[in-house]
Length: 329
Image 1 (tube, helix red, strand yellow):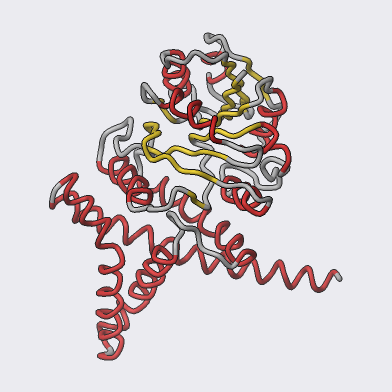
Image 2: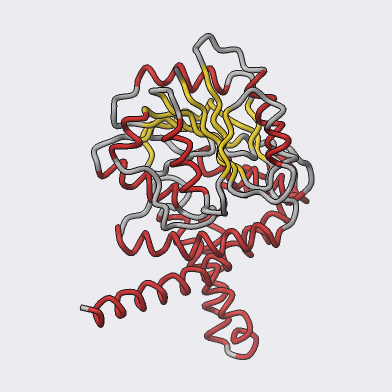
C-alpha cells in the first residue's frame, strides 16, 4: 500500500483542488490518503470530510513537522508520498512518483518540483512560480541536497530511521531542509526528477512572500552555520553571492549619492549582482517578455535584500544561542 500524507491548516479553498487531482490520478496501486489538520479555524475539516480519506485533527496548532510525523505514524503503507495542501497534481504526477519508488533503497527519497504555471494568475504568483522553477532548471545533478515534501516519495522505514521531521521547528519553516540534511547524513540520497511536477497556489501578495523569505531565510542561515555547506539547488553559493551583492548595494545607495567611493562600490556591486542573476532574467524574458522581466528584476532585488537582512538576524540569533549555551555550561 502507498500512503499519501498531507498536512493542512486553514486551506478549505485549496485542499479540495488537491484531493480532486488525487482522485483523478490513474494509478493501479492500492492507495490511502491521510490528512492531518493542524487545528484549522476555517471550514477545512468539513471540506475534507466530503472525500474518502482518513483525517486526523490536532487539538492545537503544532506546525507542519508534527502534522507530517503524525500522518506517517498513522499511515498503513510502506511507501510514503508527501504533498503540501496547496498543490494540484498534474495527470501523471502520482503515477510518475510511484514508478520512481522502484529505484529507492531503504534510505533514499525522490522529489518533484513546482511547475512554472501557478494556479492563480497575476504578476506576483507568476513571478514566484518562475523563480522557484528556475532553481531547478539548470540543475545538472540527479542528486540534490534539498528535500521537498511538497511532492516527494520515500519508504516509511527511511523516514522513521532518521527520526522524522524536527517538531521543535514550529509553523512551516525549514523543517524540510533539516530533515533532508539528516537523511543525507545517514547515508541516504535525495533524487530529483524535474519531469514530476505539481502546480502551486502561490501567494497573491508580495508582502506574504517577503515575510516568508525573511522567516525562512533567518532560520536557514542557522542551519548553514551548523553545517557550513551550501546546497546544490536554490540555496547555492551563487544565490548566496547574489544576496550579499544586493544587500551591499542597498546599504551603499544613499552614501553613494554623496561619496564618490561609495558610488563606485554601489555600481560595482550592482554589476556583479546583474551578472549573478542574468540566467534567471534571461529565462523570465523568454517566458514573459521585457515588461515582466523588468518588474521581476525589482522583485528579485527586493527579495535578495530581505534575505540579506534575514541573514544578519539569523547570524545574530545563532551567536546569541551559542553564548547562552556556553554560559549554561
